[in-house]
Image 1 (tube, rainbow, N blue to C red):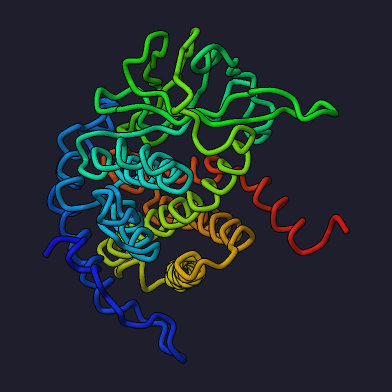
Image 2: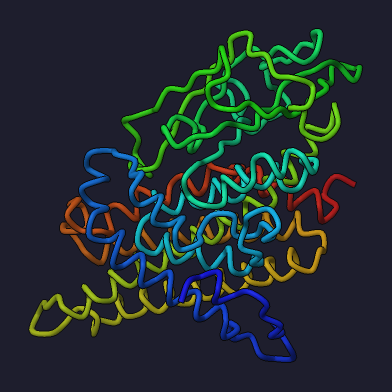
Length: 401
C-alpha cells in the first residue's frame, strides 16, 4: 500500500480522550515508509555519504511512493495528507538517513509550502503539480552570507522595472537548489523601506533557467553529505510581475509562517535521528560482551538506554501534539519552536550517548552512529538556531512585557 493510500480520507480521531496511540492509517503509513527506507535507502547510503553524492534515483523513488506534496490537496497534484502524516514520513526516513530526509523535509515545507499557502490560483496550478511527483524539486531562498538568524538583514534586492522586477544578490546553505532536478526557488528580497531603517521584504518565484540565475553545489560538509546544499546567485534576474508571491511587503510574514511549518519537519527529523541511533546503540549493547556479560546488563549502560528511550518518547509525543494543532488550524508558533528545540537537542544527547556506548567503534564511519552524530548537528542550527527558538519561546510567555 502506498503512503498516500494509507492516509487518504481517514476520519479516525486523534488524541480522543486518553488514547494517544498513532491512528491505524498513520501506523500503516509509518510501516510502509519504514520498509522503503530499510530496503531502498539503507543499502546505498554509506556509499553516497562517503562520496557526498546526491541521489536522483532515490529522490524519484521517494516521489513514486508519494513522499512529495504530502500536505498539498489532490486538486493541485498532491496527496491530501495531514501534518501528522508529514511528521511520520520525515521521522521514518531520518531513522535511516538524514540526507534523504533533508530532501523530503525541505521540499515539502520550504519548497512547496510557500507556493501552496501564499501563491495565487494560477501560480499553484503552474508549479505545484510538477513538484508533487518527485521529478522536480523547489528551493527556499532565505539565508544569506550575512543574514542568517537575522532574516531581515537580507541584502538581496528586487528593483521594480517595467513589467516586473530585477533581482540582485545571493543566498547560501540552500537545500535542493543546485541539483539538476531543481525547478526553481522562492526568494526573499528587499523591495523598499518601511521607514525607521526597516526593510520592506517581498518574495518572488524564480524558475530554474531564468537568465542571470545560477546555483553552485556546496561540498565538504560535516553532515547531510548526500543532500544537495547550494549557493544561489542573482545577477540582474528579471521576473515578471506575476512572479511576485502574494502581496508586496508580505515577504517576512510569509517566510516566518513557512519556518513555523518547517520546524515540524526538523523536529520529526530530530526524533527519527535519535530513534535510529538509539536502536543501533541498544542492539550493540546487547551484542557487546565485557567482563563475561553483555554491556546492556551494566547499570550505567542500561540507565543510559532508558533515558534515551524516555526522551525520544517525550519528543515524539509533543511533536504529535503540534501536528494536531497545525491540522486543526490553531496558532502554533511557540509550540513549533518548543518541538524543534527539544527534539533537536534530544537528538544531540541520544546520538552522543550512542557513540559513547559503542566506544571506539562509535568513532568509525563504518558504524552508523557516527553518521547519526554528524547529521544531528544541523538540526540545532537549521530553521532557526536553538538560541532563536528560546528567544521565540521567551517572548511568547511574556518575558519582554
